[in-house]
Image (cartoon, rainbow, N blue to C red):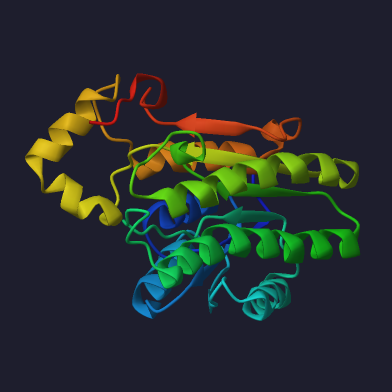
Length: 255
């Protein structure tokens, strides 16, 4: 198992893509710490499933739009597992709003969680790895919308575009310390956040017609790439975005 003895901290790891990544990395031997906000049952269920795999697991409630709570989360992870070897910045939100209707509150919510949260979680992780004088890996769960326009979701696209440039910059800044930084950019993935889409045959058909592989992605498609990037197989990869979209990006047209 390629992640035996490693500890991975996954923000937003109690559901959806984050949960799928947690299970896959636990299967590869990693101990897992997940961060959650407001849904302890799902987080506790995730911990239980990881422990059934024979791994250590911990759920920490922390709002990653708060720098103080981010550093508290990292401290709890280190205290419980001894170290954090891999950080996966997965937590994210989106708000549908045309520019002429968008509120300051919704804009701040999206940018504070998606970009500020990832930035300061990375800071806390880097400070830890520098203190123990060991390399590490940062993996950001971005989106095809770090490049692809998504009308009426401008704050979301701005956050993911910012994450792309943050990743590229940090990959150079942190390379001398042996810390790699990469993005995973999912396209349309079948998760609970897409329930409305899945129950709308017209919109679903239109989307599938834009995906050359003809299907939505599965959480397992993303988790497999995360497992690769977290492993030593990816030690020479940094500053890269791996797109997981079934060909959507290069075949997309907004109707």
